[in-house]
Amino acid sequence: MNKVYEKLTTCLKSVREKTDFQPEIALILGSGLGDYAEEIQVVQTIDYTEIEGFPTSTVLGHKGRFVFGYVKEVPVVIMQGRVHYYEGYPITDVVLPTRLMGMMGAKKLILTNAAGGVNFDYQPGDFMLITDHITTAVPSPLIGANVEELGVRFPDMSEVYSLRMRDLIKEEAEKLGIALKEGVYVQLTGPSYETPAEIRMCRTWGADAVGMSTACEAMAARHMGMEVCGISCITNLAAGMSKKQLSHAEVQETADRVAMQFKALVTAVVSRI
Ligand code: HPA
Image (cartoon, rainbow, N blue to C red):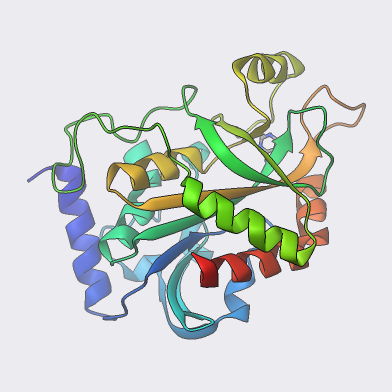
């Protein structure tokens, strides 16, 4: 059997020994939404360390877990604690949880993240609906023998972020009085923030926001036919755009400042899509 798929089936078997919960929607939550799981009606949690074969060698060991529950009667699985490429995992391990949530039955995926604003019109605290992404600067999670059980060798990526979902998200944001920017997210490896020259490159490439996650997860989810949407919280102006140095503290501070709004938007979106 394909090694990647073998690992996934081992993980799924391990999950299924603990719960038969059937999620409709999977959520991967970035900075500022870390405690969103506390707001949902929780049915069960499974620590990543309890899942046989799950990549848990570094940061994940302590805080990572799946939370199963309901948001306004919609069954969801939330990934609390994301796997980042910069932690040193192979890219196929980075997207393993995404694929696993798909194999648990989730047909739809909501992605959120903190991102640096590359577009000069963006301000810290803005939300950006992801319309498309650029993953050219990170390895593709689809490299290697194709996992035929999940999808085709050469999957189409012309609408990674579902137009249907985007329209609904815009409607919900408007109802909540949240101004929503729309733009292209570029994923770089991190963990360092970018140089000003790299940010100029990102802008030339056509990116509006930059981050260290999300796009690879979106790609893996689309490969297996999930419907995907994503929202970035613009936590800072990207490198070279202001006199300030970049820091995780600033990213966290902005994400925390707008967390209430972000949570309200996610809740509204879950019950619509
Ligand atoms: N660059 C990359 N990732 C980020 C940034 C940034 O400026 N802000 C939040 N995540």
